Length: 391
Image 1: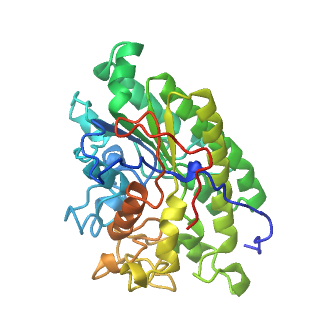
Image 2 (image 1 turned 60 degrees about the horizontal axis):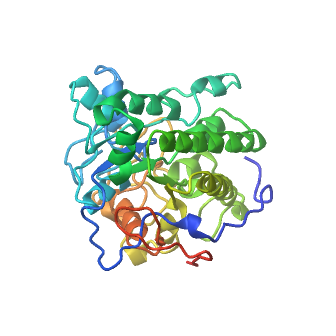
C-alpha cells in the first residue's frame, strides 16, 4: 500500500458527540436505570450468533479454544478471551448478559423482555450485493444491519403490540447499535480495492447506520448508543496486511497513520449524521460512543494500564512481527494463545482482550468520556451547549 498519510486531513469534532452514556447524579452505581438491552453490530458485540448460524460440521474459529478462556472458560462465540463491552454494560446496569438471538430462536424461546443481541461476527453494514457488484466478496456472513433490523421486527410483537405500548416499553431500554463499518472496509481492502474507492463507501455506510437509527426511533427506541470504530491502524491484522518498510507510515505507537486517519474519517461522518438525527428526534437520546478515544490511551501507554506485553502484538496467533497470520487465525491450528491475555491489548489481531474491553468500558461508563444526557431513565440533567473535553 503506497503512502496515504496526506490523503485526508481531519479534525475531530470536540462536542458532546464524544459521549457514551449518562453522567450519574450522585453515584457511579446505575443499577436499575435500564430494564433491557438490545444489541446490533459485528464481532465487537456478537455474544454467540455466528456459532449458531454456521453449520455444526463447519463452525467458525471463534467456537474453539482459546476463545472464552478468561471469563467463561469455554468458547461462547465471542471474539475475545472473555467479556465484551456489551457484557460490561449489562453488568453495570445489573442486567443478565444479553443472549444471542439465533440461539434463543433455535430454542424457541419467546421471552425477550430483558433484551436480546442481534450482532453477528463479520456482519457488514451494507448487504453483500452492494460489494459483489464491485468485485468485493465476504466469505463470512450476510447478516447485515438490514437483516438484524428484520430480526428485531420479528420479536417486536412479543414485546409490545401498539406504537404507544412500544414507546412505553422502550422508555427503559438501551439500544446498542454497532459498531458497524469494520467489515465493510476490511473486506474491501482485502479485495484489493484502492483507498479512494473504499473512502467512497464511507458516506454510504454512515447513511445506512443513520437510517437504522431513524427506523429504531420510529419503532419506539428512546435511548440509543452508537459506537464509532476502533483505531484500525493499531490492530495486528491490519499492521500485518499493510506492513511496510517505510517508517514514515507509522506513528510513535507503531500504528499505521493513514489507516487511523481513515477510521477517524468514518467516525467524524458518523458523528455528523448523529447530530442531524438528534435535530429530527429531540425526544430521543442518541449517544455517540467514542470507542476510538476510549482505546487510544491503551495504545499510547500500555504499560501504564498493566499491558506489559504491549498493545499492537496479538495474544493469540502464529508468530511474526505482530503474532498474526491471515491464513491461520486464532482458534485454528497451529495458532496458540498466550499465557496471560490480561498483559495484552490485542487478542487475535482484529479484536481486543477482555482486560482491554474492561478498561474501555469503565472509561466509557464512568468517564472521562461521559457527558450529561437528557431523556434518560437514570438522570434528567441538561446538556451544556458548549460541552467538550480534551484528553
